[in-house]
Amino acid sequence: MTQSARSLSAHILPTSATMIGVCMTVMSIGHLGPRDDMRLLIDRLLAVDALVFLASALLSFISMRTQRAGARLEAWGEGVFIAGLGLLALGAVTLAFALR
Image (tube, rainbow, N blue to C red; front, side, top):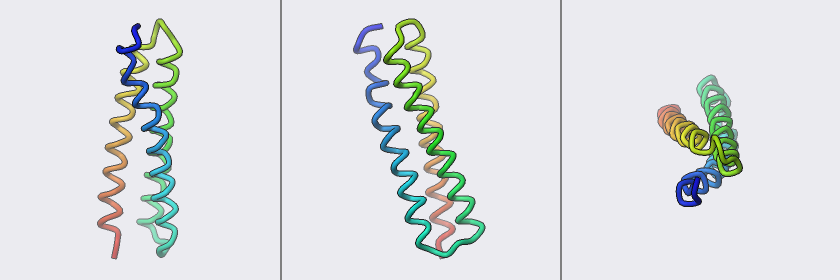
């Protein structure tokens, strides 16, 4: 596979790592407010989302390092990344409605 064909993985990898940091930051900021059941739900959602972004980063990294299965792994990494963005959006909406 050529370098240009794998350019998507080169973007997914650092962006996924950044999104892990975003999830951790939102979780940390959330701990400044009162602790209730909704906060616990949001924390768990963001923790799972951080793992989804980690999976995306790993798939992207491995796709850049392998020749044979690179395109397939890159496609999986892209799909997992999009799922992570969806979970993050769900977390943002949940957080917005949980604020009092």
